[in-house]
Length: 84
Image 1 (cartoon, rainbow, N blue to C red):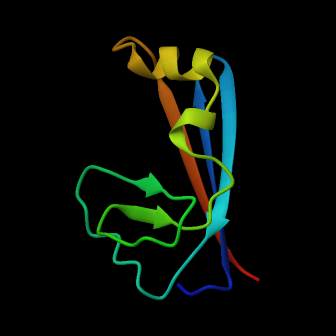
Image 2 (image 1 turned 135 degrees about the vertical axis):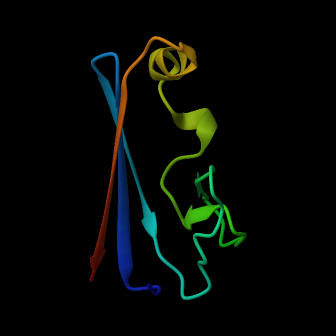
């Protein structure tokens, strides 16, 4: 994956959906076993899924965040990576 890879993550929970878009980087390792982070910056760690994202955690709809906090909510996450 490199800087030409467009990444989109769709989150669906409780009938609410949100899409986050960003870019790949040749330094992405995708090594973390339990966490993924979309970053607005170019910072890289083993948790980084995408950089230069269009949203941070604070930009995600609050009603979706409430759904994600509930242990009874079914969550569907779809990640699409396309070389541009």
